[in-house]
Image (tube, rainbow, N blue to C red; front, side):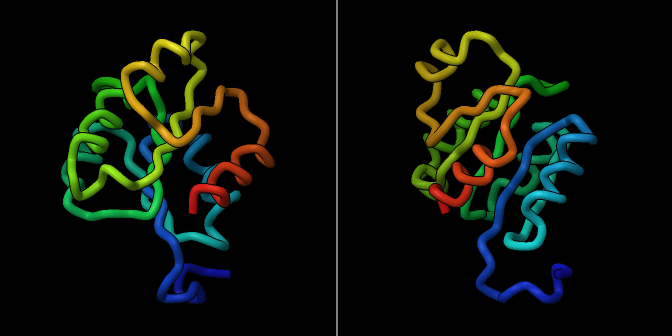
Length: 124
């Protein structure tokens, strides 16, 4: 199914991930059911902060900062505060990250694709 075949009410996911292979994987997993928009840097993501998706998928470690700071900004903005955030990271200390930002879920890399799909579906 192409993007043009999707329902006009398809849920939208914003993905902040610098790894090209993972962005491609997310497209393979989710493109048939959701509208996707990917960003490789925080700066690029922030240029679109006025647009509101139904879910955020945020990597923690990015070339120009970290996804936890982005999550904090999203949760402190009344326009985006209630939108679910799924943090994805190879970071070992996710309990520390949890204290810094209340996300909907956290998944560690490498992740189980079925588990990620379940998290996304649950939050949408």
